[in-house]
Image 1 (cartoon, rainbow, N blue to C red):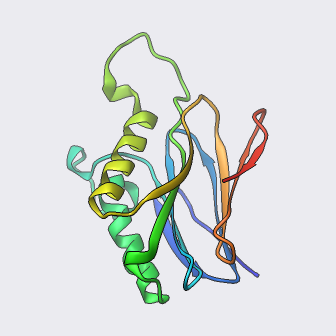
Image 2: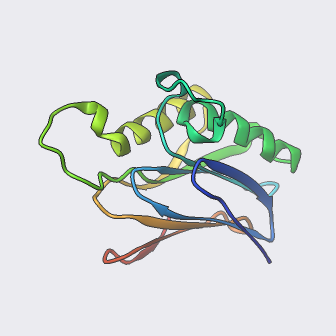
Image 3: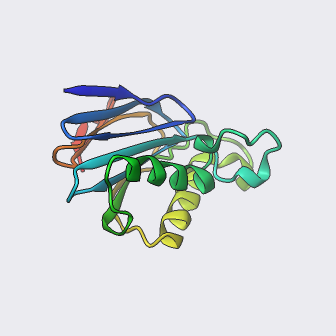
Length: 160
């Protein structure tokens, strides 16, 4: 079985039997897309909510507002049907506390909100999520079943 590691600000797609994994989701969000009918899975490890807030925005996999569309194109190349996709989200933690009410520092929360907005615009339902908190996550999506394993330190493992 092929296991593809997806780095930070990166994305990839696989067809069953394959596994996609990404390590160390803190405030970053792992956006998982899956087409059950073709068993094609995709994973984007986004770091920031919007490409419009950063000048150096050429890496589309880095942002919630641009990564999803690139990921869908990669999945379609493997046979996925855009209309049959669903999503799962993991990550979006607040790793550090700040003595400020400034929302700009709440990257994890903003990443989750931006991911949900983008998926909503594309009519892709979110069927499960493991987001928030103040701890990191490592995730693995199995393209055979669509199950998403969420591993944490101190908060156990969970399959969503």
